[in-house]
Amino acid sequence: MTLVREFELRAIEERRNGLIPGFIHPCVGQEATAVGACLALAPADVITSTHRGHGHLIGKGGDPRYMMAELAGRSTGYCLGRGGSLHIADFDLGILGANGIVAGGIPIAVGAGLAFHLRGEKRVALAFFGDGAVNQGAFHEAANMAGLWKLPVIFMCENNLYGEGTPQHKQAPIADLAARAAGYGFPGIIVDGNDVLAVYEAVRMAAERARAGLGPTFVEGKTYRQRGHYEGDPMVYRTQEEMEYWKARDPVVLFRRRLLEAGIFDEQTLDKVHQDVLRQLDEAVEFAKSAPIPKAEEALLGVYGDTHNGLVF
Image 1 (cartoon, rainbow, N blue to C red):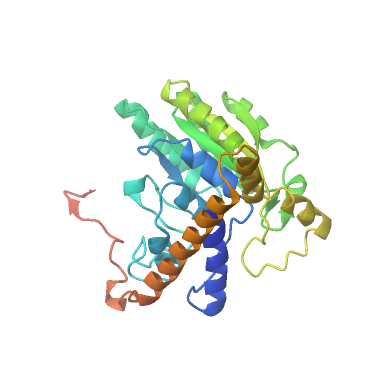
Image 2 (image 1 turned 60 degrees about the vertical axis):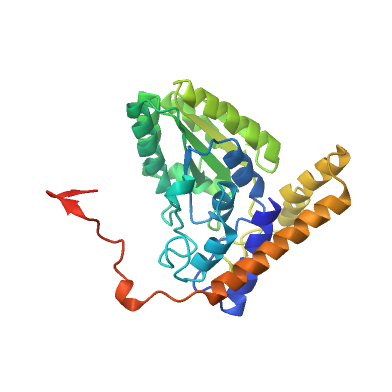
């Protein structure tokens, strides 16, 4: 979680410095849902991510160097500098792609789950999405199919209380989005999304259920994004009191305190971990700065696949 938090803060800084063009959508405050969920998966399992996906990628094993290069639009990035912050993918790590379209990754995860089911593989597909995605048709169509065919899919909702600048109570008639799973014949679980161990345990149980052939689970992690929808968002739609309340429940701070109180680590050890993270990010920024910008004549590379008798492989 420290790596996720510091990666986001460094990306914000480097965007201000001019290294990173375009928008970024930080997940500061949502580290526990990203890391807890990914740690509960096996290496062969796959995820789909969202426009706020840096934490998901790091949780699944993403390398900060290639991520920073991708954010900077450099040719050494995960997508050769073509995807940017919103569209990073690495099939070798089981990251099927982040998606700038709200709910766009959910049908992709269900498609992966269908493939695992048909091939008889004990693999699981997890779709990350926000509270706003639960109101999209793509979610309902995918949930219906996954429930009907009992596919090995985990619907991982990071309910950060806002769809862009619209509070949840103005976009849905229910407070607990996990209740919608019942309409599609599978369980919905609500967890404290700022408690990494609670998220881990919920997703671990969902993954076991999926591997046993019992079908999907909807896990709703109640959390909060501490920054705006995008970096630069003035956040005039929420109050100082609300932000202070959630900052007091910061998942990174809470877990550090928990580790210290349990006597698992001491202050010096955790400080060293923090310093190691900062060093990794210094290296990632230098890696991005030293990488070449993609050549214009390579703009269509990867857009079209090789075909054989009209089939794309």
